[in-house]
Image (cartoon, rainbow, N blue to C red; front, side, top):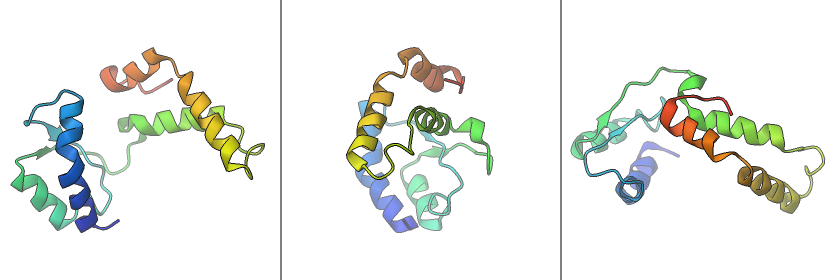
Length: 116
């Protein structure tokens, strides 16, 4: 994905997604340092929409709770036994997702506690 595609994605989805989770028009974003997120066109988009960007370290796994969630799911799935069967892999992924304790997800969101 390039910067222009990223901006198109943002202009279509960012505001509705923010509203869906209860944010009003005034919110901040913290994109990672991927080149599409730091592109000139992306920076111009955020400025034009008056969206403040929060600084982010270049490579800090602990500041990205979704990485911990993916690691948890990865640990729960026996990839070797379902490597050639996409349907089985998707089923195991969904089953693993369903048993994540709600409290663990809430910790990832609210408390900056990144361990499941």
